[in-house]
Length: 249
Ligand code: ADP
Ligand code: MG
Ligand code: MG
Figure 1: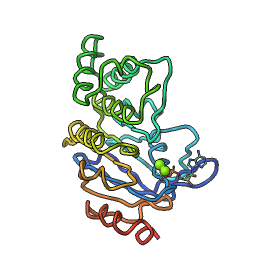
Figure 2: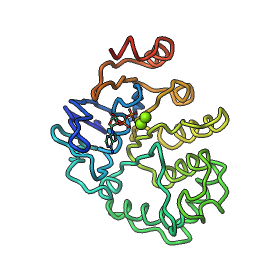
Figure 3: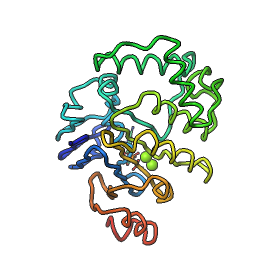
Figure 4: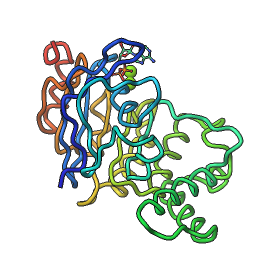
């Protein structure tokens, strides 16, 4: 089963071409990693798939579980089962994490034809996920990401992912700024929530170290707006050893 299928994707920001013919195919049950130098277009890819305003697709296609992703509004993409973890998580003053997550979860359930969760049912789910990530429930009562440390934001993101229980997660530099202990917690979270036959993950990362915890089935190198090389987990180690210069040139 194809989970995410991207064909010849071209996208620009402010009239500047950033993605230049990117193709990628991810099956259910697989974890893929995209690595690449700064400015290669990694975050742009996640924004384009999220449907962020200002990121204009000029050519190509992207489907999620057979659905035309690019035809959907951002909230419809989330409801269809796509979860995006951003390099710089947004702060939403005035909206508590719990409100935000309950709304997001119920929108997704509704789109699947499932009944909405009551407040009590939702709290049970939220409590279980917070506990699994070692995040205090009090954090979930605070406004989304406001005043969170880098590590807390990432842990919070994993709690969000656990509650939403998406089909496909795209995680952009989820490892940035994490110490080794936090990295292990985040890696365990990704494995526990997403390492399933009917789900898939795209990990966007600069460094190999997250891949010690979440072992990818495939590794791709993104340079200058397209995938220039693909391989297995050993490719990440080769990149770490030799740098992007030799491979992405
Ligand atoms: P990466 O995540 O691989 O480091 P990005 O996707 O963030 O790369 O950036 C790719 C290129 O797009 C860079 O040259 C960057 O300067 C440019 N870019 C990204 N976002 C914008 C923007 N909002 N306006 C103008 N240029 C942008
Ligand atoms: Mg960057
Ligand atoms: Mg980036």
